[in-house]
Image 1 (spheres, each protein chain N blue to C red):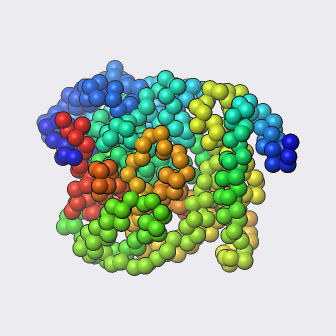
Image 2: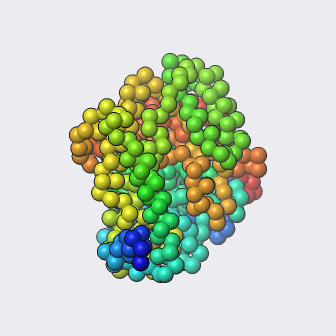
Image 3: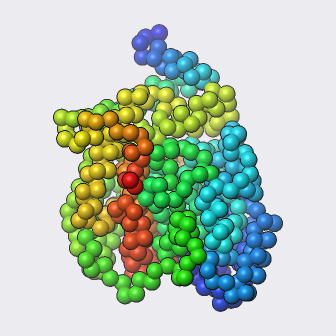
Length: 68
Length: 461
């Protein structure tokens, strides 16, 4: 089991998800798609924007839309 | 495509209310007309998962008594509507098109929005199909109806408020409720050629809505026109009784409105060529109405849309993690794999997504300080084949997630057609809390266009 496969199996075991072998084979592509999104989001950093939201931790409630 | 003849059913909520008040039709007659239409055509369309015939006819008769007594105060008195089956109603358990029962939702009770609709006099015909838990796709191995697009039965109805879009497009109810987390009102509105409204986050209560992603879930109306959506929205926002149905627009005029057209979605390879024509035509209509065009870019567009997706994945996985472990194989195959994506969203990913949402929302607030209306495509393709809908290349043409992340009010309305006759839609977006003004601008656009009045031939026949 290489490192990437180990991570996938770790997720399955941690949450107790009874995936089929075919579904486990699909997990790599799903994980890759999520990582691409996460990398894109992470590209927005304090160096890229001076918005205070990048340096002060926002509360989740305050983030829920503009109606505040 | 044809115009829906008013002799068949009223063409809108507003026309229904006028006919009911003028006693041209009773609520019971109108309800029976819709029930008959559902019986005749829904076997091919798959919009309804449950019909409440006994209860809705009783509610219609009650409405008729009030109408006969001259009552005018309730906005939707006697108007037949239908509800997406992730919104709780007292008549039946909320099943979310799933074989997995989520115990809190099996109790029969009304959600806050259904309570408000009933208080406004609406007659609830039944519940409408959804993608499983508002996330998966139609699953032919399950016992639930598969929604078909009435413009082309081989095409997807979109999702997840697929039944709501189909039912309104096919004239099976006067209006419907849908929910929107990543585009689930707006996309079926676009694909089925109807009007949908997503209110500012937090204005309409979500109590009694099965959650998908609680920081983005919104309930809203789907109907034929923006004026209809305005009436239903007023009821959802708790504004009853009311002295008038909706604000009359008088002479169509958008003088003084500052308008930004967003064209970036047209640049995605594979966009339908008609999408650009539809956006250009809408811009011309709005300019002719007096709106002043300005140039603005949406801040952090791709990053904010990605933040919405990460948020949805993470929150939905948290909602379902215990049920997934206990009932993995009872979920549809597409749903369970869609949900498991959330297991790969780390806490750092999630928190950065919230920061990006905040930055984009604040940047948009600054833009909305001197822009009244933003217009952009809902999707730059017509409804694709059902089997290919979940393909990544298809979803690149869906442009709803930015507004999911930021929570601004959106009206998704029909604005034209592809060369092969499938509806194309636009999103009209306004500043937070300007829901009524947004509806008024959308209504003004529809007062000089007729895309929203077109219906598929199968419906008019």
